[in-house]
Figure 1 (cartoon, rainbow, N blue to C red):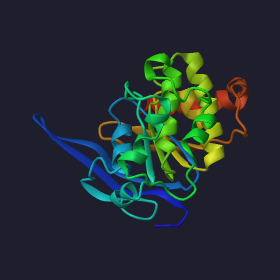
Figure 2: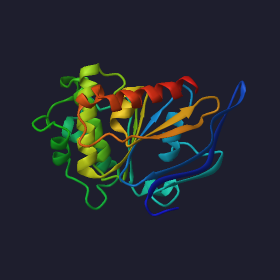
Figure 3: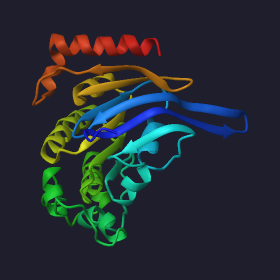
Figure 4: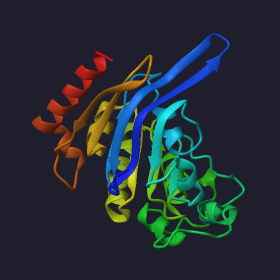
Length: 256
């Protein structure tokens, strides 16, 4: 394990046993994700994107191979509160206001946060929700609820933020706005982000690299570097460089 790696997989394989027999969700995944980087995962349904995130989060045990997170097995990183997770559904508690939803992980974890973690109010400001601390989930739009979920995932000061299609259910305008805001959060916190999406444009716009997975079984098809400049703005999607990158990703996906 290299000190610069937030996540490292070596011949990682995950199999599930079902009524129809054994299904190989991931096979021989080799991957290194540098600390502080932003990786997007792209691939057809059933290629194991979410499964790979769940192995990183210590929610699924690999069948064979190795996985390390922040230099140790995922279970240690989870217990050390070094992993945050944002799902497609914000899953906010309806009887708690915005601020108390964000602070929930601190209450569950005995009030512990890693050194350098930001105050909940600062995180709400970072995601654009200053002044909404006392609002309840039913008073928020879908995009605002996802902002709360991101702040909640960051409240313990995790070194790794895993995001499983967090904007997939939102309208295109809101999704575009949150893409730009997420890049600002990443630049401000320095947290390593691994982001699952079905959108070619979202994967290309957000990631420093795009990991393309092929299905049945899930395996690495290609790791594509993204050379777009920073800071990124939505207008970049109209440039020849972005169009060429999106076209390449689409062609690779057609062979997955």
